[in-house]
Image 1: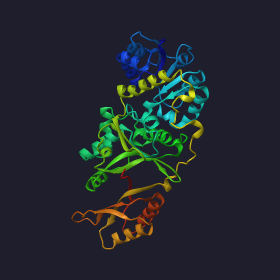
Image 2 (image 1 turned 30 degrees about the vertical axis):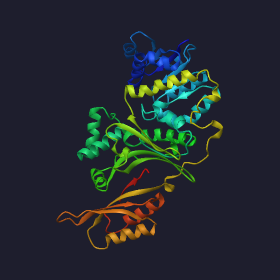
Image 3 (image 1 turned 120 degrees about the horizontal axis):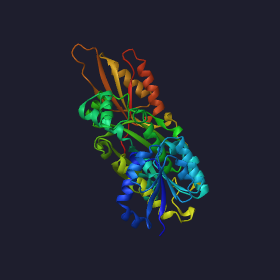
Image 4 (image 1 turned 45 degrees about the horizontal axis):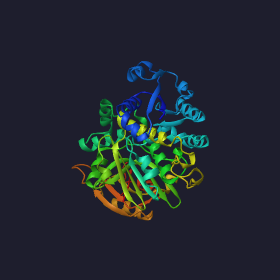
Length: 436
């Protein structure tokens, strides 16, 4: 059959991996797709690099739009990232009747509703498996493998940089700042790691997971986002003593009144599989009402793992290119006219457990005051750890784990605790999920 012609825009780490894997496994991929898939043109600002990678086997240009407007190209693979040129490339590709494969989670999390609507109206596909958790096929699992289920919740370690940092802090007892420098030296963290360590990258991905799990519009602006920059080695140590580990989780959870969509450091019981995901690896747990909890684990970044997802999308698009648009898997799993109007809940309505670390004067009655404040807000205590003060010290740490309560109740209790004369400084709060 006539080959599918692909225009690759961006031949950096993932683009280079896509070129390499597609050529190395060409025979296998053709057998699966039913026809050859060939990258016939590459656009990159670094033309010399593109020529070096492709070895003269594809047309090379620095003009991305020459590929978008080329009638001989069937699929555009967008791997340049960001919101600006990338959005123009994707929207014009759709307008020109081309299918799009992208790894751009930021673009889809912010502009996904507009992009998917345009693609539906034009009858083309936008495939984005590589946008969430690299080589882990979590999008396909949610859209196809779990379609019989009512998804109760999904929780994932979906940023390798932060997971590496937290793993090193736990293993070596080092501070956040020290481990971040080491992560940058080893190439796990960017020179400007803000999107990773502040939770923004994970929130982009969690937004897409929530949309597919619940059939709601893409709403990154409604996500609660908190990074790991304020975590201290002492919190990781105390969590361990209580049988928990701290991970940065992206969480999407169905509630009666809406959907929780949040990213923040989270205490997880150490016996859970996801609590033992270390280094730069990713993992997502999805709980369906029929199947129960399912775990998806693997490399969340890197040239060839992410290329694996890009090429899987290319194969899917190739198989379905000639199918009627209404017979394809919907972009966000649910039929476009059956999307849910369930709102994303404000953080004040979120229900979870809490780890609270308090620095207090070591004197009688302090703990009684604290427990009374919690009780007044309807918050019950699950576990408590009180550190003996060092000789000569007049202050000590109290660690409290609470049962599930509303964030608004926790906010009110913390405000009152911080008003106690015996309380020294701010109360440290980390949310807690049992993931059962």
